Image 1: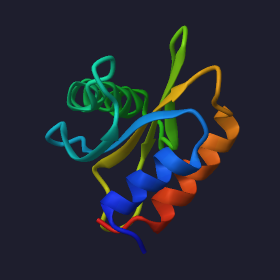
Image 2: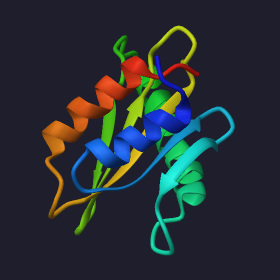
Image 3: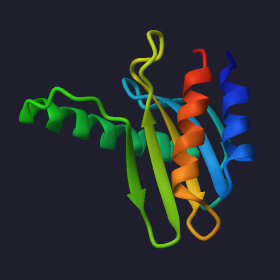
Image 4: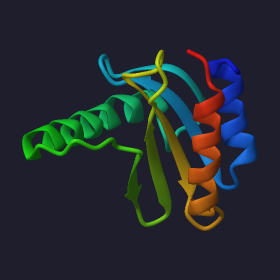
Amino acid sequence: MVNVETALKEATTLIEGAIGAALVDYGSGMALGTIGGGKDLDLAVAAAGNTDVVRAKVRTMELLGLKDEIEDILITLGSQYHLIRLMKGRTSVGFFLYLALDKKRANLAMARHQLKKIEAELEI
């Protein structure tokens, strides 16, 4: 098991094209940890904004009566991918991993695979 800081470092070093990463509590919208980002990507703002995305999707699934789980949510921009992975561990319900990727350098399938692996090892 790894802690939040180690998990986020792994996300930005092991995943090609990673711009920034965060672990977010989608109950409050607060980031428990961030790495990367910069003047063009404020991870605190991204954490809060993507919390709204997660809440909206969870609410929509409830309204539709879907009895399934969200693995991840992909937002594709012109130059970036934004990947939101909802955590499912016993102690991690209510959290998501957020990863911003440079579209030109990233391999989306590998990024999803690595993020799933990081989620499995992360202990909150």
